[in-house]
Image (cartoon, rainbow, N blue to C red; front, side, top):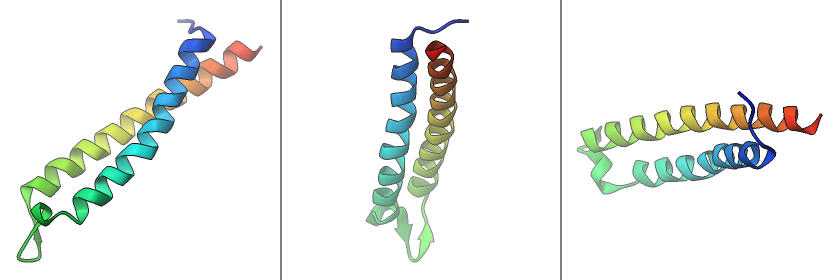
Length: 75
């Protein structure tokens, strides 16, 4: 499969955006009053942690794909 340079840059930007967005989201969830009850994590925290983790994994994979495609278009 061949990606255009524009598509490669979009995928790379998506990967970077994921790493800017999701750690901040998780920090905000971590300090939320909905995340803790009597010092123990709540299902709210668990669910949002999974969402953030999966999004970071997918963002990383998409970013790597974009980076490889970008390097291939420079040739």
